[in-house]
Image (cartoon, rainbow, N blue to C red; front, side):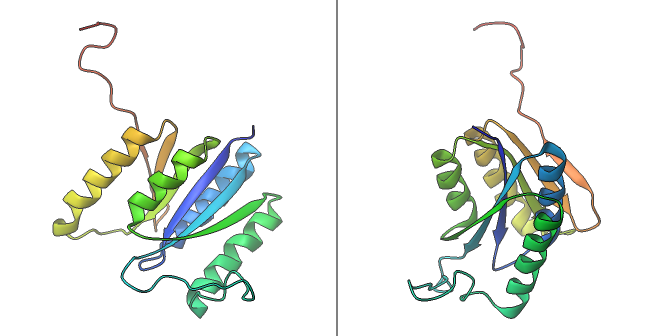
Length: 161
């Protein structure tokens, strides 16, 4: 089974630079991209019916960056799947990766500055995601800085307790 790059996007606070980096990474790996657009659970969930096109619930700005990511993937010869989900951002990612064993990388855009009051919640959510996911998690900032979350090592590697 081919490995894939998962790019989750929070539609309430989109950070498209993560999606663009995810496309570049997939091209280098000769892999595919799974773009996961997640709406918050506060009533702003996408309402897409059977007769509507899948991107119908997006705002014009959201549609624009999705189109740009799709275009980038097409230019680089990378296949892309788009999934829509509604609920708490990290919970939706965890549910998705549990059902998709072929995900090798999670690439997420993060804002350049995170208010101190939100930092602890973000750190706790990333820790939980890291515990659930055996692949690599890459955090991409707008300026192109990339942080790789390494799996935590046991305090005494090589020793059994």
